[in-house]
Length: 74
Image 1: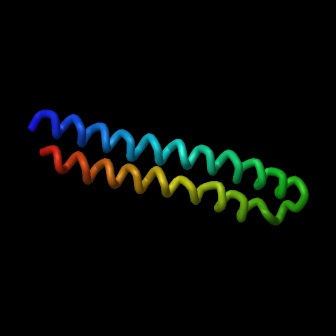
Image 2: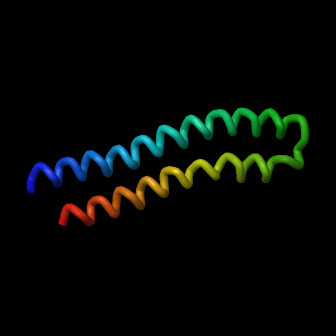
């Protein structure tokens, strides 16, 4: 039973960690494109900001999964 708790903790860490890495990679590309678009046309600032924030949902979903997994440990 103790080993199961450790595996659940590793799974929870992977859920958040891999989600954060994926979001970071996505935000890097989207952020660069958004800044480039904003320098040419200032009206695109809000759209670029929204597109930059969307990948953060990956981290939020990872956190929800991690919380659900940690509930299994108890």
